[in-house]
Image 1 (cartoon, rainbow, N blue to C red):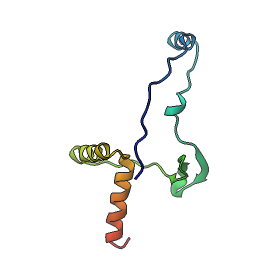
Image 2: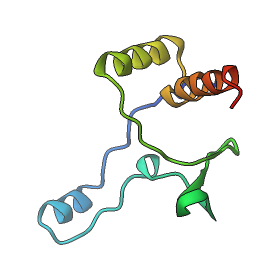
Image 3: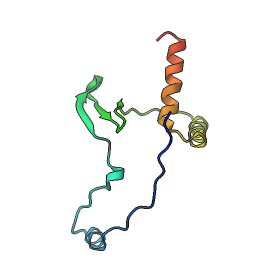
Image 4: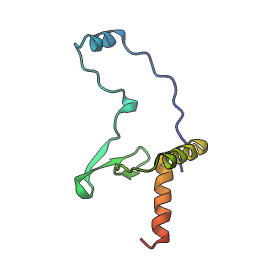
Length: 102
């Protein structure tokens, strides 16, 4: 698992851009840190886009639903160890599937 990135303070927005946004005169693109990861353009099964992280990992986005208590436990586990929740869930699924021969 990789350590969680430490985020610093964001730079102050351009006052003119803020005024244009508030008045409805301009569209504001999301800050680079909030943009979705770049993708290769390759299609995974089902026609979904494969995202490539800075470290070269290729990932496909998915949504799972779990009980609130379990989601909280995963979040606390990840934060206390300084890792991504994605890595915790991925490793748990890999272990589960490996023990069942999948």
